[in-house]
Length: 321
Ligand code: CUA
Image (cartoon, rainbow, N blue to C red; front, side, top):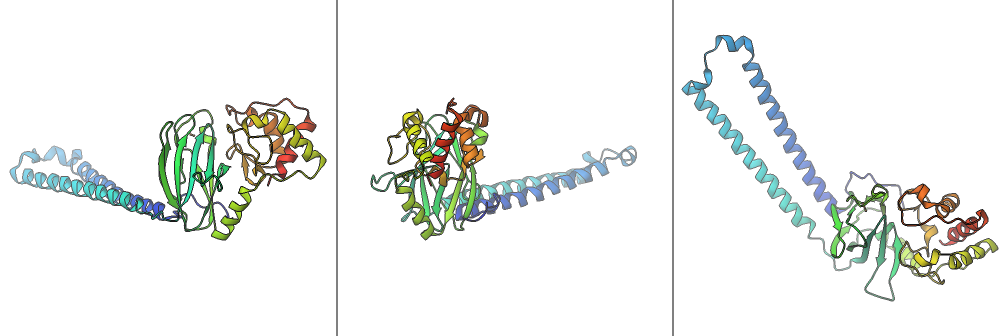
């Protein structure tokens, strides 16, 4: 899988275009800023009291006036040319970004929820569809076509290493395509204020070599593993009997809720609560007992269950790789 990729470095063709545009704008702005500061320093130096007291009103002298007009005219022309050049560069970048070929694209429905991400892979084919949450596995070198939707309020998809931002708007569908050219893990973040836990709405894009990606897909399509220990079996029964299944789905069990993240392979995920804590036995137990303590404002309610029951549910979920 590799480590977390530097957010500022592009890892796909579109992010590379945006990076070049950003560098061009930075260079132009730095040059303009330095020129303006130099002009300001020259002006202050010339208008200093020592020279002012002895000099007559220079600006009204015809020769100086025509020189001033020339300087201001040149500055105006330079500003217009530079701004126009940046406009053209921005337009060309936009065109370049839209040119990604999508013939063999992986299709994913990405749905924003307060405060997590739902990813439905190959949503148009009932035999291939499966659902993941908060982690987007993608194959290296192959385009990914996202259909963006929101379940509640406006969210914004943003993985800086791969592309710019795009909003997920309730009642409206939009598409967004990107390609990761290097294997690795890329951090994404909801970029539109969406409520109390907006800052904790992380999405990891994990770009893998095609064979590894295919293996991941094959695994995700399978039903949840059958529990092997007594504790895990008790955990499964509790999940089905308690209220868990009203919101969460676990393929192959009676739990078929669609309001919250699919838990069929929850143990294979790196984090809980869309990036807020690492995913392990202790954090799972704490999360089930009282998610409000870890992520206040999240939609999942606390569960006042005996400690053994919480541990059993955590053990079962921990087996769902
Ligand atoms: Cu979702 Cu901010």
